[in-house]
Image (cartoon, rainbow, N blue to C red; front, side):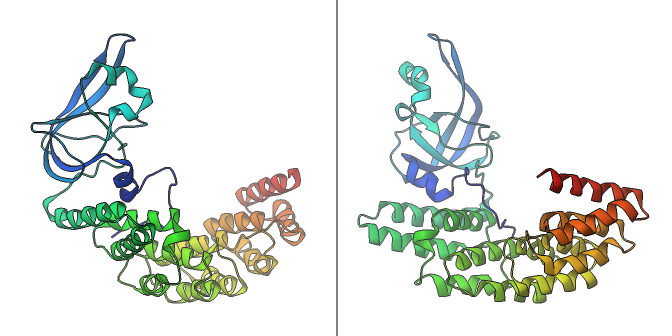
Length: 341
């Protein structure tokens, strides 16, 4: 399972699509290349025709569902695809007034290129259960009941073996952290962050939210992850640790800089580059003076990010005296950037 630790804020989660949609269905795609046309003014829009297999929210009449597509990079389908569709009444989309006025189609898709949600048979049960839970949570009348249901669903789906569901739950956790990451959900989320069977990217995202809410000792946990995470997940921890600096994290990154494999050492050099982190200047200086050109380059980046007088002095010396021309040039570039700032 793969789940990124970062979240693209413009991308809606599946729960957000459920809330915003008037109709949520699992459907079979009949014609993915239909077109809608309005004469006055001349407008053409892509459209899709599908047959509903399961309705989770809203109502649809008999016969095929025809819907417009609108947005930056519409979802792409093939004939015969089974897919989740999140549709809104077209009259609610002002940009499609011309198409809506023709009466050609009642719906417009809320999905863009990264949210087609086509389903293989093996994924269907997990998505079916998740959709029913999300729809029920969104429909709960009392706000406290709705939030309680959403917390339960979100925490449960963070453990899903279906990566798209786990990623969506993590997105909800990040975007709605104020109401989802609480003392009540804290123990379950801590358990997820500690579970080595779960993808490391997802664990890092959960740990970040717990740290932000003050529910864990962040520095200690980040240092422990740097000590105990095996490859290939370790490099993800190293990169993420840059956003969570502390003396304990610096100490562990220095160990990896000096004893890790080349890729991990280079990542550690960059992650040590925290503004004002003078404790990392000496080990990064040793890396610049070593024989590995990749590590030299990463250490120069780290020193440039530290940006203190001590780091600048090392960069100046490297730019003038290092035996490798490429390394001198990179160090000079960092010096110019720092002095220009």
